Image (cartoon, rainbow, N blue to C red):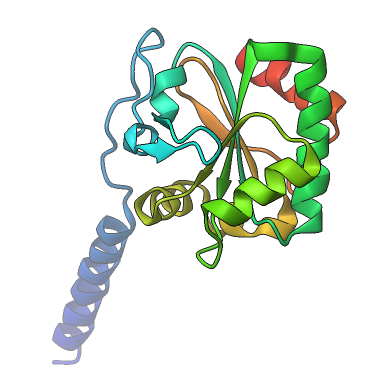
Length: 184
């Protein structure tokens, strides 16, 4: 008489355990792209406007180049320090690496960015990040991508792979090492 409830409790525990294990199982993932296939990132096809020239471009326009993609705000002194290091890197590496700076502060406009560029003698692609691009970059890299004082920089390689570089100002030599290590 007392054995039936114990047996039912045992069966219930086994079923519960199986349910929990199945619920914790990892979902099937899509197979990784073949090594010779470029990584597809839809945010690379969002149209940007260079604030200096007014010309439109997409990050994907530079698919055969290595790219340093920076998020910044004109009010951010850490961002300016990173941009000065980008400037040093550019002086030593020329057009081998494309630099794109995205202003992700919704309170800033193209005129503020142009003034920032002129005041600091900067010369590469600068654009106001459209909200859909900012959201896509946050989805992939987290909120740290729009945390200007952390000097956010993403390294994008020719194959489309991308990775977030460490937070803080990265000296020109470190940028060179990251490019050599991560994309060659």
